[in-house]
Length: 379
Figure 1 (cartoon, one colour):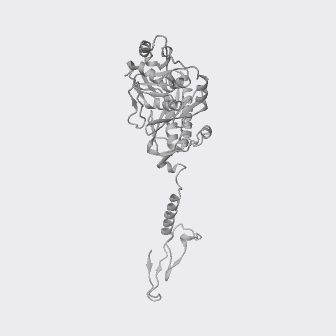
Figure 2 (figure 1 turned 180 degrees about the vertical axis):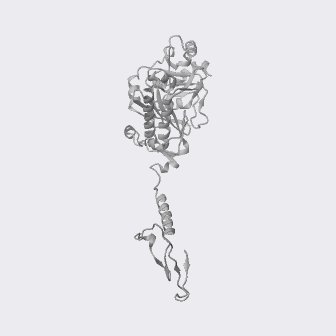
Figure 3 (figure 1 turned 180 degrees about the horizontal axis):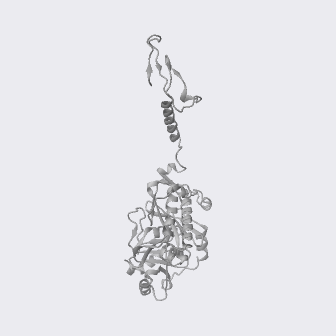
């Protein structure tokens, strides 16, 4: 405030604040911020200063009342797993749309990340990247404070306004899931594979292609989503709650009796890149009556075990955790198992530990029997 005193006319107790020069302030503006207050004399309030003070007060009230935050403001500390499952399903399906759209284009934008341990090309396409953007940022937009671990990484800045806001209410989830768990955000890690079976994708072997999301809690694969974009179907399961999507339940019901308890006639599915070595070793240990099927994509191979078309999925070399976390969660919800070839559980808690070097065995039944027979396949 600026004050002046007229020495000839004013009493000793009177304070007058000089009228400031007002530029662009409407003479008609009224209200709390323009009131004249008397404190033993006349005080004229500087409108600019009071406007600033009013603005600060309004902002304090706004944020203290929960305004300015999204519906996920409390996700800063906690995560609602039921809502996260709904968003994860939407993310897998949005990523799948990009995968399908790119495959229809003349140029896939293919490049190479290098070679796998088996010496096979490890490609990347526009389908991988466009799916990554939709999946990663779709989840982060709904749950900005959880750790999302993707196979891919951003190459350009992402315009978040172009990322659809995923619904936290999926109809099937609302129907099937009765729990409403809130967990600390730092206990949750979300693994995403924006395009599983990229090599097969480039060869137009679309049946092997999936997008996957896995929600791990304290390192354990808890919720898994596998989406087949070219078939438009999504399988999901919640371990612990033992809740499964209709797609999974229908597949299991159709093939429930199609189980080979005699391992000498077992059906085994393996990666296309090293089917020969596994075939030879498996026949020696399990017997010549087994059937070994080469296929692409960890998601596809695990789904073949889930739906009863295969008895075991075996992988003997390094594999990344975003390839196997979702299958592990769904299998666990079905009382199946996905472990290393030593039978050890795989931890999915840390992004910096994305490699599984212990091989893997995925089964719905007879897991221990397979482990015993397949000791010679350990990496």
